[in-house]
Length: 408
Ligand code: PMT
Image 1 (spheres, helix red, strand yellow):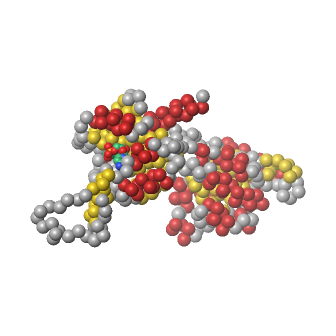
Image 2 (image 1 turned 180 degrees about the vertical axis):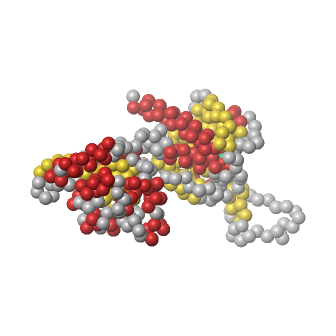
Image 3 (image 1 turned 60 degrees about the horizontal axis):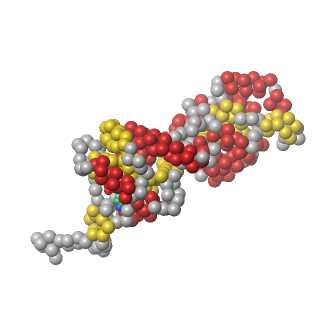
C-alpha cells in the first residue's frame, strides 16, 4: 500500500448499486497516501451524492464535460494529465461497453481517452450481465489493450442472484491499485528537508541573513518525492515554487525553522540543507532604529547564538537518519568531517562555497559525501537537480542497508 503515497488517482464512479462502496474506496486510497479526484457519471449520481465523495476526497467532484466553471478550475485535459492512475470502480456493463468502443460521450470516458495513465476497472453488475457474451467480448477487448481488471468477486448480489459480478471490497481494490505502481527508492519513508536562509530581525524593517536561495534543498525535496517519499519541506524565505507532491512549511527565523522541523517529526530521514543564521539579535527592536543616537560613531549590535537545529534533531530519542551540509570556503573536507562528528550525523555533504559557479544561489553544485566511517564519495559539478537525484540515490542505498541490518 505504501506505493500509493503521493500518487494521484482519478477515481471514476459509474452508475451501479456498488457505487456506495466508492465512498469507502476513496477513504482507503487516501489513507494509503494517494491524492484522489473523483469523476462521476450521470447515472452514478442516482446512487450516491457528489457531496459525499467531495467531502471524502477533499476536492470538488467532476461530472460534466461541458461545465464552464469546472473547466475553469481544472479542465478535463488537465485532469487527464494529472492522473497517475485512472481507476473506475464500480465499472458497469454499459461503461465497459463504452470504453471498449472508445467513446467519449461523457466526462469520464473522455478522460480515459485523453489520459496516458494506466487504466484499471473494478466491474460490478448482475451475474447474468457479467456472463453475457457482449460483456465478455468487451472484457477481452479491454484486457487486450492492457486495461487492468480487478475482480469481480462472486457471491450474493443486491438483486438476490448468486454468481460473479460483485465489486471487490474497497480494501482489495486499494491494494490492487497500489500494485499498479513500482516501488521507489524511498517508498514508505517520511523525509524532512529544510532549505533556504533564515532571517533574523533587527527591527521591523531590517534583518541579518545570507545568500542561500533554497535551490539545493528544493531540488532534494523534488528528488525525494520522485523516489516515492512523503516529503515535508521547511523553507526559509525563498523565491521558488513548491515541487509537486511536496508539503511545504514556510518560516522566517531560525527559531521558527527549528519549531517547524521538530513539529514535522517523526521522520525516517532529515536533510539539513538550510543555511541557518548562527546568531540573532538579542531582541528585535519594536520600532525602526534611528541613526541619530549613533551619528557617525558606528553602532554595536548584540547577538546571541541560535540553537543548532540539526544537532538538536540528531540527538532526539526517535532520531531520523541525519544528513547535514557543510558550506566551507577552506579546508572543506576536514571541517566537514569535524561537523559530522560534533553534530552526531550519519552523513555530511561538503560544499566548497569558495569555488565560482557552485554553492550559494547558483544553479550548479559539486559536493563530497562523507559518511560516519569517513568514506568519501565525490559528486562532480552538475545541476542541483541532477546532483539532488544522485544524493538521494546514495542516501537511499545507505538507509536500505541500515534497515536490513536492523531486521537480522
Ligand atoms: O540554497 P542554495 O543557494 O541552493 O545553496 C545551497 C547551500 C550552499 C546553502 C547548501 O548546499 C549548504 O551548504 N547548506 C548549509 C549551509 C551552512 O550554513 O552550513 P553550516 O556549515 O553553517 O552548518 C552545518 C549544518 O548544520 C548544516 O546542515 C546546517 O543546516 C546545520 N545548522 C547550522 C546552524 C544552525 N544553527 N542549525 C543548523 O541546523
